[in-house]
Amino acid sequence: MSRPRNTLRIIGGNWRRRRVCFPNVPGLRPTSDRIRETVFNWLQPYLPGARCLDLFAGSGAMGLEALSRGAGSALFVERNPAAAASIRTALKQLGAVGGEVLQADALRLLEQPGGSYDIVFIDPPFGTDIISTCCELLEQHQWLKPGALIYLEQERGKPIPTTPDNWSLHRQAKAGQVAYYLMRRQEDRS
Image 1 (cartoon, rainbow, N blue to C red):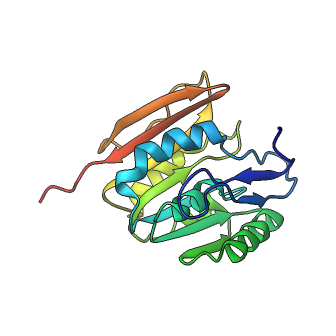
Image 2 (cartoon, rainbow, N blue to C red):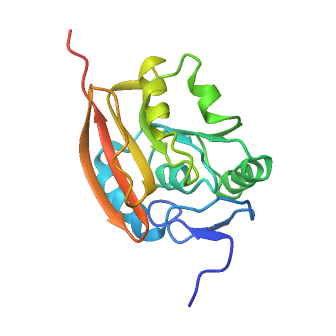
């Protein structure tokens, strides 16, 4: 049975198997079930109570999955008004606590002082080449807690994005046309 068009299924947690709709927006491609399953298996030990930031949220797949699996909060940042409204609707339908949607440009937001996140999802539209810029801004404007985990998703075949010196590659994988990475920010040493 094929997936209904413009819906995604939450893979695990409290809302497992629940479907949410998303609008037909150019460039919006939710992270596949297979990739989300892998990523959230990686993240599971770190999710309970985590503060998450879902940049370029699109369908909201990553932030919704995080909330379903026990994250304390998720800020969804999405520039497109229809996509942002759709995430708000999904949060309401699921009875989500701790989810907030900010209709904004992610890069402009990251240029401001940040707010200590445990987990960040960076999955911009393919072809934009802005992941490395996002990573630098997250570090420069103090958006990350020590030991934070940062998920990066891009087209397969591109070099791994450049990240700040105090980040290390924690996990990586490829599926279909997608390459994805989980980076870890080093703990601060005083």
